[in-house]
Image (tube, rainbow, N blue to C red):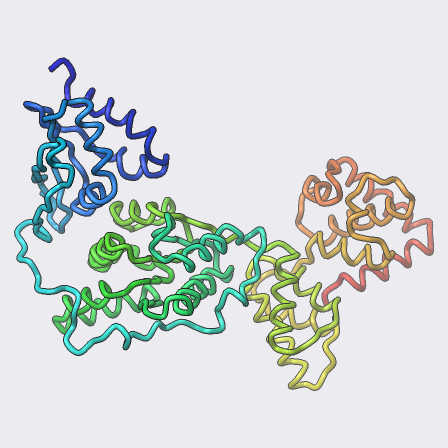
Length: 476
């Protein structure tokens, strides 16, 4: 034969690439290594038993066509499978398949051991006395989609979560990995997906569990010699939600058992949902084979919410609790706490408790005092956005006009004052201040600050404006 095994497989890949999606090609065909070709038999090496079964279930027709095209009607395909186990000397073994011809359109089933050198375990899906209906989902009904405020910061994650909820295990988003910083809504969204699935598919078993609880359960199972029961229990689950999966880092045995549970669930079309504080590429102390599986589906990030989203979150929480707060108080909370939704909601709860216990009216002054105490160990600093809001309210101007190119005297003056206070009260660079004021450069900001200083020394009315505004901006 004129072509060697690498050339034959390269020709096969050209045809395959035109018949599958790019993501499927990268996931299921790029990892394959051609091993040899001998007397019309092409041997390819795949990284695992699971990988082999997935190809057989989903791409066998395509593989038959391309191999037959390259090797002729009598051509055959063999898999060399690297078994994944705890030993360091995992060796491939070969599965021979029937000839790829018209008489063998359906591939005969191949009986495979669970692991090299291991005995088959008896019925791995039943624990005596345990029924699927008895499994408590551990879902919090308060964390529903209805209570999750959508914004630019979370639109992809929410949309993919909604797709998974409508078709668990039946989308390309398996596993669905939701990642982001503390207090941005990862746990809320994970619960929301689980709740929606339970409502739409009552017969499906949904389980939410924190990664640390999973690890502790596994340790207990080892201590009580019930590891098989532990594995079998998780293999029964239809939708498994693991929160804060980064805590598996460094726990080799826990990662190993989760790896096998993951494989089983994924292979059987069950939905897996994971949350983490970082994307897979940044996870340290995790086995590569596990990280590669985390990348199979979709990784969707949650970023810090913008101002409009923060306002909507506060308003939704107030509406849900049947309370109403002055608009300037809500705006102040949204402007002041801008990186952590959980912290912002906690500040709202603290403010309500303070007002109720001390029988005080909820005012902007009370909100300023509370925020200063609530956010500890950080130097309190107003944001550029809040300064602009206060200045625009003071001069009765719409916020948008401050960022426009208009040269009207009153707008220019308000813009210069906001630049002046931004330089004085924040740690932002001149370039950043200018960017917030309609894309002005640092020289314009410096000029504005000098102008404000000069006017304050010569214009009594203007100086009064600055004093009033500084009182409104200064946190008591």
